[in-house]
Length: 253
Image (cartoon, rainbow, N blue to C red; front, side):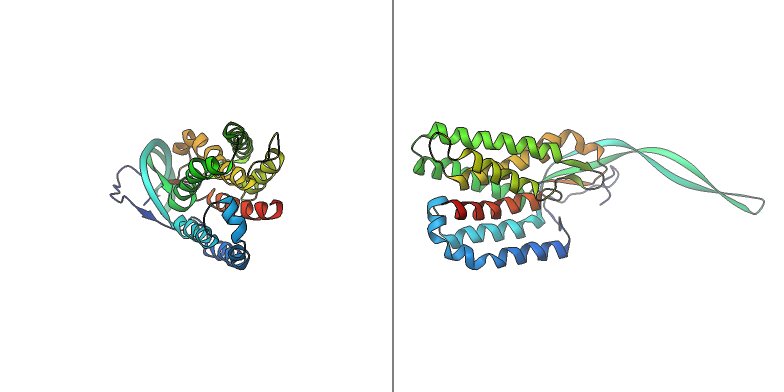
């Protein structure tokens, strides 16, 4: 799949590794290292998520392995200059003459299962069910989440960089630390709110919006056949945000 218009792609589900095998193993090892900690923190997850700790761990694993699955949603195209060389023989001497042509490169925009859809569903669950059940002042609680979301979105958008051939890349440590610091700064204002929800929702949705959605206008110029929202370039930051939120809520509550 090279992304040019003359090649048609009928696939509606793309499966590939957004990160290297070594990096995938490293993230998996980090998750397994936290397994005893997560399983023993049942009381923490009961208060923070309203779900058993083992179910939260399953969500983490589904996010990790779901990072391989991308669902195409649209295709954009743009003219790209292509340089090739033409061989010319003259009196036994071979010359290579550059030729420039323009082709329309197609870029498939897809949504990553583990880095976008699952975090969105978990965030919606927290916002629609957990927050109304555990917060006494919904306006204050939602206001804190929205404020943290804006902070993370601004920070991530500032550091996100378009990378030719890849997509939008974000340093993996920025989203978790930005969401953790935002949650720490905001959760106790006026009345104490759940810092896990603030960190998770602001971190995951803020990364998706700041890195991917606000840079969609640049994807056609990146020269990449596939740009995955929540996938390559941003998945590790979103995934680590979930783990960092777990550590954060355990340290505070």
